[in-house]
Picture (cartoon, rainbow, N blue to C red):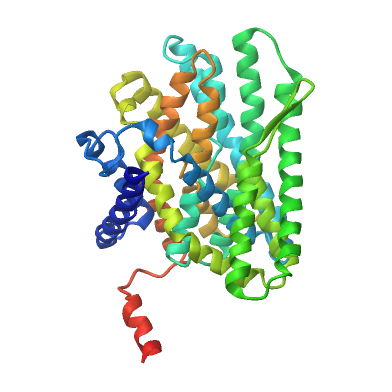
Amino acid sequence: MATNLICLAAALIGGLLLSRLTKLIKLPAVTAYLVAGLLLGPFLLGRLNIPGFGFHSLEQVEGLSIITQTALGFIAFTIGNEFRLCQLKATGAKAITIGILQAVITTVLVDAVLIGLHLLFPHVISLPCAIVLGAIASATAPAATLMVVRQYKADGPLTRLLMLVVAIDDAVGLVLFSVSYGIATALSNGQVSVLAVVVEPIVEIILSLGLGSLMGWLLNWVEQFFHSRSKRMTISVAFVLLTVGLSTLKFQVGGLHCGFSLLLVCMMTGTIFCNICSTSEELMARVESWMVPLNILFFVISGAELDLNVLASPVTLLVGVVYIIARSAGKYFGSAFSCRLTRQSAPITANLGITLLPQAGVALGMALTAASLPDGALARNVVLFAVLVYELVGPALTKRSLLAVGEINPEGRTSARMHNMPKLQ
């Protein structure tokens, strides 16, 4: 316990110190946290085996998954704040159209390119692996996007549309991956399971939305028994922790494997709560301020989880580069096409796709599932390589796009100490 606590303290301090350096070159803080994780990870400073200084093995990092899962739950909960009825009435239908279309177009394009690579070089990548990677390509990392938006207090048509699309993208990605994984498994085993391909993905989404709705309603009901701000924030935090725990449960009904999507459950909880609680905006702001250290730990640990061994495999690098190029093109052109279809402005059409490039936790979760395929190790390594690239480059590109449309102001030097001084006098 002592070693883990010292490691977590080093992770927080290291991430914060490095964020001061990245600010000098105008990079988002999330990039600093990821780089700090890489430096403290088992492939760099962690190799020194100094107790409490860095993470000495991937097993040690994976042992902290409770922190990353909890952070993802809080991130999804706050994203649910974007689904207020007043906002959905204005942009909901368009956001849903864009979210679905760009994800499907990305999957189709990546599938086509990787299947073509399979036909040219069958020994490099198998057909099931190509199909699964196409579905994984649809996933976008909500955490990195949210961190950039929060850091720079971005606001405007693109930012609001982006938050909705990112949330919808995860639901669509879940369906696409479940179907693709079922097809890939059928190709590998020679038999098709209708339950795995069609029924189980639909059941998972229905169960996730149902559990999220119930937890959102219960949170609003319990909140009414508390009146102080601190106690209401505490019960909100407790409910998110409870929701994260419940969303990890899995069970079987007959031959049907049932489970929940953590992101969908927590997003639905936040959505229901924000639409029925009159004081939800103030509570959300307080929860977000409580989340800051947790978010930093999430990204530092995510950086430490990145397996640099994948860089030693020429096949992984080849397929990874093809995957990154195809996915980037799919996100960019898929978003541009769907934006034109829904009559978005030219700045949004030109920049939305770039803001959807970050990829992390959701894709890694899919890759772990895909690792059970005969050629699944390649899929996992390709996604690890892509996440390494996207997480280091994606936040900076998101910031650049939001700057281009004028929804964040150029950085200036601010000091919380100086800002608060008049209040203390």
